[in-house]
Length: 466
Image 1 (cartoon, rainbow, N blue to C red):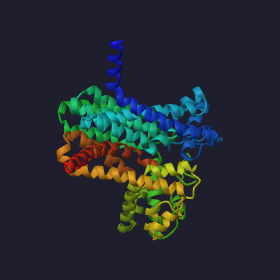
Image 2 (cartoon, rainbow, N blue to C red):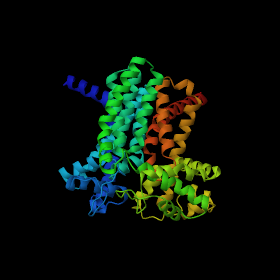
Image 3 (cartoon, rainbow, N blue to C red):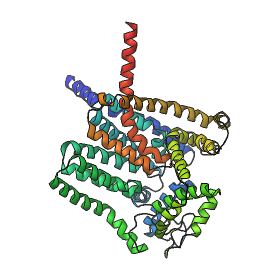
Image 4 (spheres, rainbow, N blue to C red):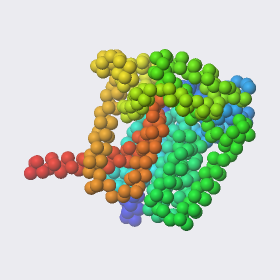
C-alpha cells in the first residue's frame, strides 16, 4: 500500500503539469465541441469558405482520385492548396465518415502541441512554472481551440511546426544529426501543410550553419537537408510539373501577392474599389492552358512578371501606409475578436469592428465605433485588449531585463527569428487565424516575463509591508 502511494505521488509530481494541461484542454474543448455539435456544424454540408475547400479536396481525392476544389464535374486539378491536410481530412472521412472524429483528433493534437510549447519553454528558461504558464496560454488562446474544432489546417500545421522547433533547439544544444534530420522532416511536412513555412526550412538550415559552423557538418547537414526536403516535397512538385507544365509549388503565393496585396495597393493608388482593382488586374493576366482560377479571376504563374512593373507604379507612401496598417492590424486583432464572432455564429454585424481600418480611412471616432459594436463583440474586444496588454507588458519587462534573464542566447535568437519570419510573411493578416503561429511563440517569451514580473511585484509588496 505504501509503495503504491509512493508511485502515485511520484506520478503526480512528475506529470502534474501535463495533467493540468490535459484537463484545461478537455474542459475548454468539451464546451466548444458541444456547442459545435448542438449547432449542427458537424455536418460537412454546412462547411463554408476554406473549410469547405479542404473537405472538397479530401472527398475528391478519396472518391475520384483527383486533387480538385471543384464540387461538380469536370473536377479540374489545381494547386492552390497543398496536399498534407486534405490527406488527413480524407483519411478520417474515408474511415469514419463526416468530420466529428477528425475534430476529436485535432483537439488531441492541440493538447500534444501544448506539451510541445511546454517543452520549448522549459528548454529555454529551465522553469516548469514558466512552461506551465506558456502551455496554458497556448490552450486558452481562442484561435487554438476554435481552429481545433474546425476543418482548418492550422492545428496540424502547429503540431508539426512546434515539434520541429523543439527538436531543432535540442539539435543546437547537442549537435545531433538525428535531431537535425527529425527537425528538417517536421519543417518539410509543415511546408506541405501550409506553404507559408516553405522558406522556414532554409532559414533553419542557415541558422544552424551560422551558430554551429563546421565544414564537414555543413556538408553533411546540407546533404541530409536536400534528401529530406526532396523526399517530402518533390512528389508534389513533380505532380505539378506533369499536370501544369512547371514546378511551381502552389498558386497561393501568386494569388496573395497579385490580387490581395498588389490589388489593395492598386485600389488605393487609383482611388477605386478593391473589387474593381481585382477585375483590372485579372484583365492583365493571360489564362493558363489548364484553368487555375481564383473566384473567377485569371491565375497564371507568368503573372510573376507583372509584380515589379505594377509595384513600381505605386507611390512609396502608399506602400508604407499598407505595411504600417498591416503591422498594426496584426497586433491589434487577436483571437478574442474571432471568439466573439464564433459566439454569435458569425452573424453579428462586423462592418465597424476593425477600428484600425476605420481610422485609417478617415472613419468615425473610436468611441462611436465601440458603441456600434454588438455587446458580445464589444465584451470580447475588451477582454482581448486587457489580456494582450498584460502579455505585451510581460514582453516589455523581459526585453528590458533581457541580459539578466536570457541565459541561452542561441535558442532565444532562433525563436525570435521564427517570430520575425511569421510576422513578415503574414502582413497584412487578412484573417485573424494567420496569427496563430506568431502567438504560440510569443507565449514562450511572455510567460517568462510574466513570471519574473510577478516575482518582482510580490517582492516589492512584501518589502513595503516590512
